Image 1 (cartoon, helix red, strand yellow):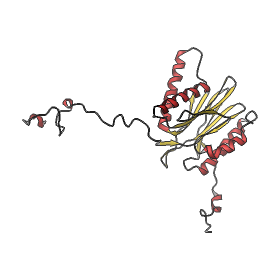
Image 2 (cartoon, helix red, strand yellow):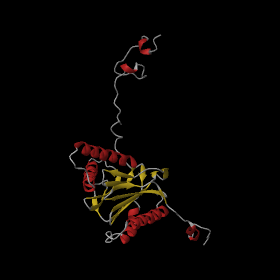
Image 3 (spheres, helix red, strand yellow):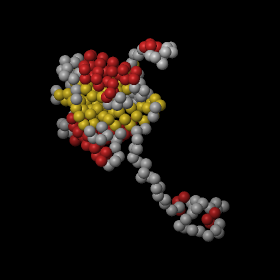
Image 4 (spheres, helix red, strand yellow):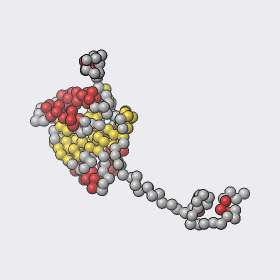
Length: 264
């Protein structure tokens, strides 16, 4: 039996088929008016919060928690926001996680290209930072930014490097840098302990400092998590830790007026 009503004797109109009755392979191609209009990230959707990084006497150290929030929902709790690039560089990202994944893909492709050239050269932290600044500024100029704030840190040829780049292509370097809410709360703590003293700061002291800052952020930042990872870059290479649990105590909350048992 012929199941297509267009073949049952009703007059055909090849230009318009209001009932969608033509066989699929015979239907005229249609253009989705909105197909080109949904490609740009209009605003961050699944986001990560603060990334902290400091210099110490043997290299740099960077940390970020493992939370990716869907709006105000703490949705994904095992996201790694630190990424190794080559043998001497690590990056950490705040902002939209899908855009960060696109950046990771770009960098991995470049690292692979450098490796296949086999010319004895590879990308160091300063080159990665410069490349990302061009990528971010290019996307911003096309009104299609990558919604991230990125820290780039590394150690190469006996020199430490720590830099920042954001979705506008803005860049700077400093001995201690933070993104997100950490730029308001953690930076004063980091600057007091690091700036001007990075040549005397030991790895153990740097680790303890960042641990304390991540605890403060967990207390104060509603988009943070009590689990984080720590990346260390020294002359021996890049290491990214497993999840580290923050030890917290909330007994002080009972003394906060309007929160604890107090009524006045």
